[in-house]
Structure formats: structure tokens, C-alpha cells
Image (cartoon, rainbow, N blue to C red; front, side):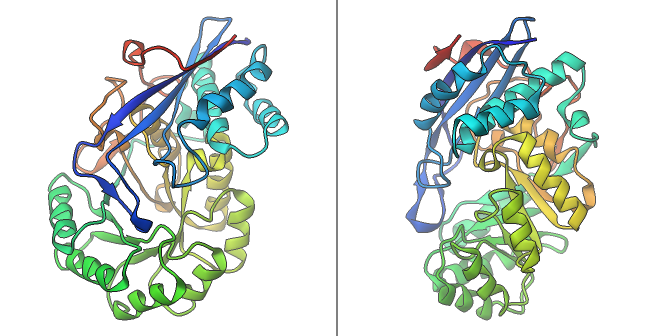
Length: 366
């Protein structure tokens, strides 16, 4: 089997609820998501999705996808997409960095491999569980807004809530307190600063709330700064933005820097490398949130296969991005039910992309 063509489409999404806001004054109302289709000479096709969270989060932006595919695409035509490790080695040799571009290619190859073998990606990744629990991201707002959002989503079955903080410490303390006042026993609250605090600001927040039950996620921009905060707080800590791959995970683990890590598929370069980090976490006993930067039906399916092949006791959480957006590209994509998401059972990603909704490709190779 050989790759004969790559087509990249870009589809606008809009949020179903209010603007999504997080640290640093960042706020978005919608996204431009990239859908990659890889075609083979056997007639099989593979799909993937990469959707950066605007241009100010991670080293990724939507306009970079067409250029990245144009750079790598000619090197991939004629390659066997089922030799996924060889595909990854080729991409790393021909293009430094740009993991989000490589992620699109890697996931589409996994989709083809699953279809070629008649197996779900979750099975190919090591085993398939039935479903898993989800978290809901709570956009930064007033304390009352965020508490109301938590109550709303709790009514939809969610029991884990990731609060977007990382701004003025006094405001963030009030936000966290407001949410902690409305959650119920068994609920989990994560205060996610998305690198937004300086160490002294983070310490003000954790000291003010040191006797409360919640997690602190990525308080500062660097590992050293997060370690300085961790040394002076009893709250369990989640690391996200600094976990860029297996080497970064090992460095953080050796310094006892975290209790949970957040692995984003497109940040590390696709399902192949996400599985490497996931398997290392399982070996080391580190709990994980498994997700991506953003996306819709295709990304949610990819997340479901990664999360759905992970040991449940080490799966801290995951999310269902297709419930945040107003656009559906795959009618059979997994949908949440009572705060949980089922793992697709069909071959590959196990979904059917409605190509009529993709429009014309913005980049085509082959």
C-alpha cells in the first residue's frame, strides 16, 4: 500500500456557549480546524484533525498547517502509511519541530492502519475499554459565572471541572472559592493557570486556599517555576504545557514535579508519540489527562481511542471537544453520555467524515 494523495481542508468552528477565555487575556469565539485526508492506491483513506487554540497557545497556528503539509507531503507520496514508525522517522528527518503538522499525518496513518486491519485504533494502541469519564473546561469569567457554569455542566453529568484561572490572584482566589462552594462530594476541581502566574502570584493563591480540596495545573511557564510552587503547597499538581514529549516527562518525573500530566496529542506529534509518553506514564505510575489543544468530531475520536486504550486507574481525565462546538463533521462520532465517552468500535477512527462539509482543499499533494 502506498500514499497517493494528501488533501488538507480547513473548516471554521464556533463555540456553542460564551467565549472561551483563559490566562494572559486570551479569548476566542471560534476556531479554524484543519482536516487532513490521506488517500492510498488501495482505495483506503485516512482522516485526522488538528485545531490549534488560536495563535497564542502552543507552538501551532492554523495558517501553519497548509505550509507544513506542502513541505512534508511530497516526501510522503509513495510511502506505506501502515509503516507508521518509518513515517514518523521520515517526518522528523525532513522537518524539524512543527509537531502539530506531523500529528495530522500520523493520526491519518493510524486511521488507515485500522481500516486495513479491520481493527479500532484503540485495539492497535494496546487494548480497548468501553468508556471513560470526562472533564469540562470552565471559561474564565466572574466567580458567579464560573460557579453557574459548573452547576450547568454538573447537571449534564460532568464530575470533573477544569477552571481557567491564571490572572489577578485575588480574582482567581474568588473564582476557585466560588466553584468549591457549589461542587459536591466526589467532584474534582482543577485550577488551570495555563502558565499565567508568576511564582509569587501562584504562591498567594495556593496559600490562600491551602486547606481546600483541588488540583493546581501548570501555575507558571517553566518547570523550575512550577517546582518552586510545588515545594510550598500541599495541593496535588498537574503539569501540561511543559510536557512536550518523553524526555520532558522523564525530566519532570526525576524532579518529583507533578502528580498528574496532561498529554496533548498534537503537542507531542501524534498518536505514535502520545502512546510512547502514555506507556511511560503507565510504567512510572503517573496519572494522565489525555486530550488535544482543541478540535471537533475527528479529534474527539482520536482522543477516545488513546484514552480508551489506557489503564483506567491511571486515566485522570479526558474531554469531548465536539460538545463545545456548533459544527459536526462525522454523524457517528462518539458523543458524551452522562459525563462519559464511549470508545468507537469501528476500524480505524471508527467514524465517517462527511466530506461534503469540508469544502475545497487548501492544500493538495499528489
